[in-house]
Length: 478
Image (cartoon, rainbow, N blue to C red):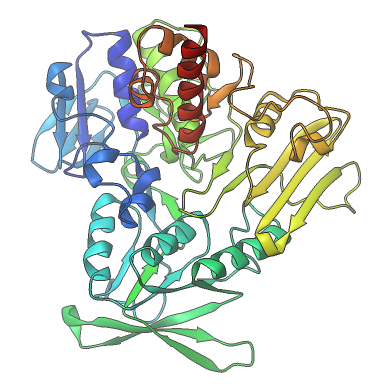
């Protein structure tokens, strides 16, 4: 996704610079964020493409899809590809992303057996969908963001699904323990079972060699015993690791990923840049789409010369869960509690209804928030968090906009034009209004022109609401 956005941004700034794209996957770049919708059968695979089939040719881009770069020769400034070709470069941009992490455990010594898969690519999604046709039970190992999305997708296909998570609560990186418990109850209402502090000891299989097939997941119990969960399908969602093997073999500096400066240059070689999940900037590796696309925009401006002062100085991480029937937004430092010095916590819980809201405040600024089950305040909190803006004196307005008497800024209709509607692409309400006034009279057309709603998709409702409101206002004025 980072690479596709970079090429698009670069070409819009410099129509003539020669660009060659290598991609190990055979299909055109697509939005990985929306894979859970494809898995659930809610979205067709071709609907998540980031470029159409003719884009590369019509824009003079040499796209070699299905051709993997196997070696980088930094001295000769050339890349060697799997098809035997050698291509010289002036600037090499690494956008190799991440790969799914498969933990070492019994049952995986000879690779993944039949019925056990990771959930990372469109091909993974297709294989899971095919197996789900004949499966009855599925186990998802990992209760992080991707694991929850995979579980919801499988449940939507009619499978009995259980999520196993090693930590004490679900999505522990984004949620506090109380929110994790509410999320577990929400999943239970949807028919998805969860078990936390679940220590997976291995997979049970039948058959031998390449014909092995998974039959169960074995758990190590606290008392030293074992428990086996029978299953037809296992999805390993145990996290991702930056794909840096190519960079490491080329001798570039690697921390958790390729170490880059504010101009996204490798600290080892200024002719090599890295963006997205394979880059490490100021000790941070970003695993979300918005920072990756921001990096792509900065780098395009630098290389095209249209914005020589552009710098990437870091990004705030805002996570949205993309799973039908579950509304969840999380941002910043969410794990502080009432007993932490110097921190103010505003919290509301209605576990029976699956609602949990929390705002974390320090020095008069919002430093973290969780919205689960009811996310109408997401627009307000995102603005306050992203811009470190002063907070309203009535703290209740943070979680329930308008209830304490302040204007309801969370509603897209009531947002000021400067408010950001699409955080992934940094599209404001004013830009959407201007696009509508310029003739884009449907949400799809506004999305195509502004890119709003093409990232994580969580702003789609707000986008459609604004367009509908503008249509209504025009009718009233007429």
